[in-house]
Amino acid sequence: MNRVLVFMFLSCVVWVPSLALASGPEAKPAIEPQGWTSGGKEAPVTAKDFVPSIGDEEAYIERYTVSMDLDGGGWIGAYFTISNLGLGNGHGAARIKIKLPEREDKGTYTYFKKVSRSDWSYKEDTLDLSIAGMKLKAKDNGEGFTLNFEEPDGSVKVEIDVTNDLPMWQPGRGRIDVADGGYLIYGLLTPRGSLKGRVFIDGKWRDIAGTKSVFADHSSTNVAPFDLGSHFAHFRTYKDDVMVAWRSLKLSDRYGGKTFTWMMVGYKDKIVFSDADAVLKTGDTKHDGSTGYTIPYSVQIEGKQGGKDKVKLILRSQKMWREDLLERYGAAAKLVAGAVSKPYRYEFKSKFAAMLEIGGAKAKVGGKSRYYFDFMNP
Image 1 (cartoon, rainbow, N blue to C red):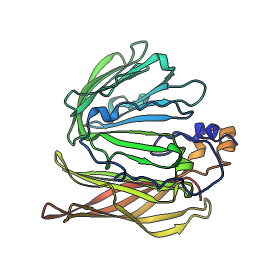
Image 2 (image 1 turned 60 degrees about the horizontal axis):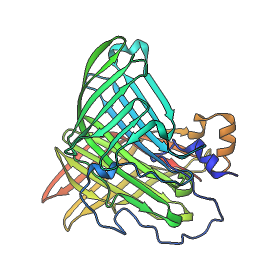
Image 3 (image 1 turned 90 degrees about the horizontal axis):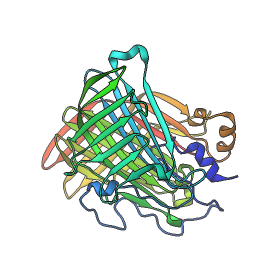
């Protein structure tokens, strides 16, 4: 079984785009995994931390994701991908989706194009990436970015300026290292931001804006999701001036089986709390006989910062949806990929409550949101 081929079918299904290492007998990790806070010191995050880390591994892959909710309704999503999958190295791909309320009858506009290494560009000293008509560029002061796009025929254009309401951030040193040179890099280019801009579509320009509704992240790895972890989980919510987010990765037995979880809290224009060694606890678990997974209908995340600050986040599921991620692919892909992994995504509509003790002050934030678990193998 060619695990690199398998990964080509699975590379888009989890919260990080990933790639495959050479396959071999399952064994204990040759080195102790290095989590978000181990093996290096935290440092101020700059735009240079988001420069592509292009490697020559057979299946290196890297992704930038931008999600923007628009005032008055509508949404824009932009995705940049760099990978060595397939023939040749350093392929680039760009995708953008545009949904505007005033053109509901025409549905969502979608553009996708993949190009070879010679047809896209980037800078090494700051984030300035251009792929297939789409450009992502960090501002000089590191407090946001611009996003531009133009269809080859000029029929659709996008010009967006994003200002960060919360600063760029990464959990700890921004990476996890495992055996065989495997790694996972993750950071938030924009944890929460606001946008102004315009879209040219249907023959006319339309002004757009988004207030504290932009999210942009970056990830890079060289380990296939079904090799790296048994679950990937995430949560993000905005409640007035507060943002709360966490992510969790449980490593596979191949890499030691540890769970690495981070959480952060933003308030107004500052990140007031973060813990890259947070603790994930699951409860109200039920066995899903159709998949073989044990599903958590409640989750608790506990984090500490310094000597006194602490946050406890509790989520209780009200409704669950299950998605077979292999259904996104054709019969041949499902047959090959299904031989080594059974990826399912569980989406939980939930109530949440966050108890905050930060800087000597206590507060409680609650509401409704969603959390997600992606399981790789039962």
